[in-house]
Each structure stands twice: as structure tokens, then as C-alpha cells.
Length: 95
Image (cartoon, rainbow, N blue to C red; front, top):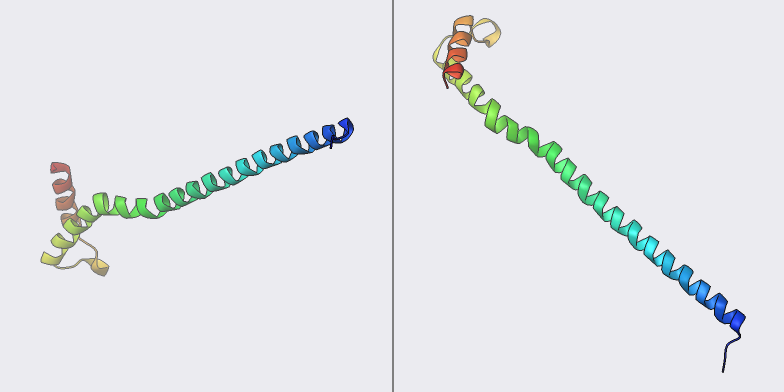
């Protein structure tokens, strides 16, 4: 059974439209996954970077401050005295 040329042309146009729609939906889904992975990476960085920076930069200073502070008498409100801060500053600059 042969198809009418007009019906065949409409079927071809409908097929092309369905293929284009499928292509666009796949692109949207791909962009959605890329956005999801990007957000996960961003939040991991936002949450992990401060922990990393604390452990590598602030923790040694805090340890030196608390070690020096434990051996001497506490200052006003438990803060280190100016002499202790000077010793800490000289020990950090010496490294």
C-alpha cells in the first residue's frame, strides 16, 4: 500500500520534529547533570576549604599560642600578655 505524497511529507516533518525535540531534551538533561555536579563540587569546596586552611595555617599558630599560654599565667580575661604575643611573633617570623 503506497502512501499519499502529502501524508508522507507530513510524516517526515513530524519525524524531523520528534528528532529535534529528542535532541533538545537530551541537551537539557546533560546541562542539568553538569549543573548538579558543579554545585556539588562548589559546596564541597565551600565546606572543605576552611577546614583545610585552618589545619594548615591557623592550627600551628593556635597550638603555639596555647602551648605558650599554658606555661605562663593568664592575662586579662585569659588573653596572652604583650610579652607572650611578642614571643609568638618572633617564633613565627623565625620560621
